[in-house]
Length: 397
Image (cartoon, helix red, strand yellow):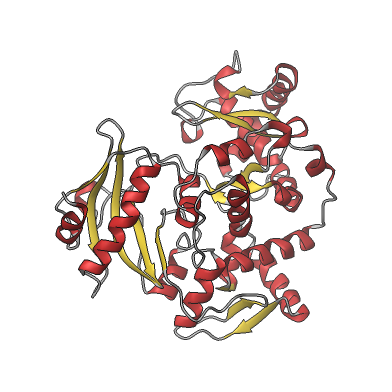
């Protein structure tokens, strides 16, 4: 199991030394290694897609990502449904075309959007023409169409129509606006680089093989279910593709201590003898987003409690696992208090046998680095959790 953990950490880029001054190239390198950056609306700390890069690069300028994600024809990333809503390297666009074609047929798409498309096809076409004629638009800029609260997920009709077009690949995100992170849509044919649009599109089976290998490269070692989950591929299709990839030698079937299911090792995976990592991981980091895999690899049972009533939460609202060495050793409930210019540790709990000054000292280094990255002046520790007193002493609070 220790060997499997090291393989996984190395594959995720968590075994490497952080650069002194992360560059745009570093951002692309890490994003390519991970395959995607999951987007989430929660902003109690920092937007989710920024965090995996911080975990691997340290304090980088988030404009390095924004400038490549929303840079018109020069962009290096595009938004689509990867794991969930995600930023993906543009090289993956041809590998997602089969999913867009499925969505256009009403397959593998949210039911609310599917049913809307059946009922309001004329409206969808009208919204598409508006974008084509007027240029990039947010849902709030579509005139004469019901907006406001109501409908599926509280979306108005313009938003739902645009999301249908987004699923089908007819429009994509041109940029994001304001504190609400509002998505602005444009025609895909107008928004993505010409060379990306001109890249030959593989058939469904080949695209899935390539996506599975991207997942395998990012995981290092994984079960078939883990590989399917990474890009949310159909499980039945993945079973077929796994056999093909094993036959070619791209994937090696292996037995992993403690796993009930077969594991798959990427043939080129690194197997380090030792890893000295230190990182705070977002709830949507690819190392831990598949909760069952995190438990199998690290003995770490992790559940996000954002939607749990406050009085029922065990570890807090927005809890980040803390990686030290080869283990997940603590859970930290964090909030960026921008008015007070403070990174607030609202609770910090050690894993069994890990409540030590050494863990607190290592965590304090990472918290100070995060505070600096977020433009905050100090780290404030609330006396909640068995590691809090150690951490408060270390942080000088």
